[in-house]
Image (cartoon, rainbow, N blue to C red; front, side, top):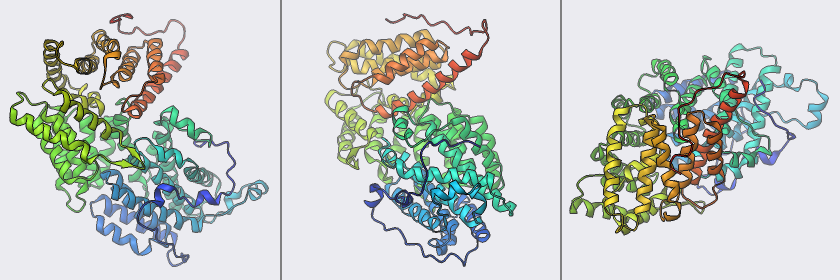
Length: 606
């Protein structure tokens, strides 16, 4: 059970256990102070109450779930953890800043309540006692787990709180204490004599949830970010993480549905948005079938079922499930916004621009996540309409003018996608958008082509649209100042489609065409490193591993400033991991067992 490897001393560190950082101190709500009187709520009852509250929550009865937990939220570790977890789920589903801040508040409370019961051991005790874990009381063991889970939830929130993961890096030493708590929990599971089988099962599912989630979280971090954390001993394995969560989801325990949610969310959301689209929809659908039997109208599972259909390119079925998720509850209206977001993209994939605009407009009006991004999307989709009437152009111009007004700064930093939206809006206002591919560019940036590649009927009309745009651009080549920018964007998009259609030679030509135009790009400089990445992935898919490594390395060391750099590095990390796996498989083959890759002319387009 060696899931955690740490070379650092894990002796008592009270400053880490306080679990506070500068980001939390800036927020408006004080943390409720725990009352050190835990004797009136026994462990078995608290676990039973937390399980019942989680069932209420997953059945869309959010107010009842909170009401059941709140009376004990400052005195019982499982009530505190359950209350924090409800807020945590709300935060990761809505992306609302207020929800994130409230979740942080209650997660911090949970860590403090659990901290009262955590066993405090000095280094000399660990050295002198052969098996210190056998002396842990049952409450102390579960307190270690609840504390670790609180820190894990706080760490996972950083993925939606800060696109640059700055708070993750700054909080590395704080997170380390939770990492150590999980290490202790692993040892407790193995080395403590458990008298209560049910208690042990609940504990084991928590250990599986933590080990699996930590491993998945760390496995997707780009190397340049992970290196900052390696000095405190963090390591992560995606394979191990998925295995642990599968084991945890199979136990009839408190955390079983949480393990299932994490598994399905990784396959349907994380691997698509932050990776190369390598999720497993077949596995997700099977796992969802088990969850929907117990929670047939649970909005979280209906949403994930919609995502499963989306990444399988079954767009009409996905639309139906998102609408079902909206209709099944009214109490948590922010979840409607998440479904509107998905419905918007489903219509974009079908090139149904008018429907996509309606959802983008609704989000910009009702959701508080990022008005700048919603407005830009609305204008980008409108710019795809043909023909562009004077009335339509006036409306697009009006929306583009609003985009910079709502730009936010978090901890002194711009949100990268907002910065991109503002830059693109200003370009369109200055140079026009009669030959726009702005809507397709957004599909690419959200990794939508990994979804579209699964249905040729969705790709064909997009390719026609790109070819028409390229003809229009060639007609104005000498008179349009942004020709190189728009032409290179069209070539990148065409290359991605040709790659999805299994036309590697044509795709390669398109990507190299972008590289040729590097010195002429004024607004779309990001296209060069992204084309290097796409070339690397293309060669990887066809087992030209040396060429893949060369282009992925060029992408990694590309040192010119460009927008959306962090988004690229997540995808690059996933591609490098796939390359490493293929190289290891190649080394293990016997001589003469080489593959017969599809032919790609090695110098095409140069």
